[in-house]
Length: 279
Image (cartoon, rainbow, N blue to C red):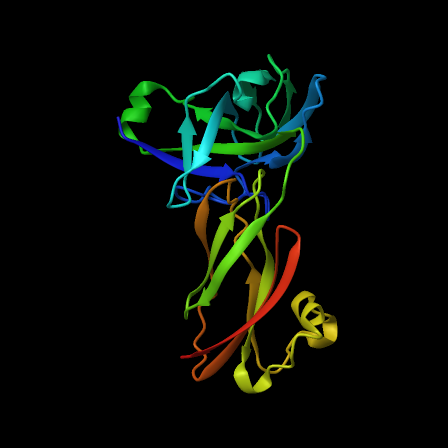
């Protein structure tokens, strides 16, 4: 039987879905909201949360729900881990674990966090995966390539005193990406949050009006010399790890000198950078 999987992991939460380790989920087919739960405090009491699964397809989908402990590898891919007594996945109860959503409808999914022992200080993480279950007869499945989704909602919970701290060792720019070398020296995950604008070098207006040009007012719709803009990759850097976070730049046919202006925040520290490249 031939089977194809579309996998999207929703750990970073910007623009809804961010694919982390496989092909992109077909646009507009399914969705989960919220796509991420961050800074959930474990204060000793049971916590109850609600999500909604959306089916934008023209046919029903059957879904299975699983909860996992996880980390990231050196290639910035999700790596599932075995549970342990302090892993958040062991404290999460999801209801329901299986359900079917009619075409163009949604379904509420609830989960509770019930620590079985005193949480240690620091960050506790889990991912809730929503996996499509086959609904077609096996005879048909053998003859067709099935595209099934697997999407996840990341949960970051903290206990006790936590420290948000990170080092930005370097930021480098090539003609197609921005690479940030980040070391997390704190006790909770951090993200390289920010945005960039690409200018023809001779037209660069400086950083003072960065936000005005980035968010764009009607009169700025065709700003002379503005080549492109976008957001930085917000993939998480976990405590005690050092990772290179790469943000893809848009393809441009512009030749000559370009200037890339970057405005970012890492662990609460704001920075600005400018880079000149030749194409």
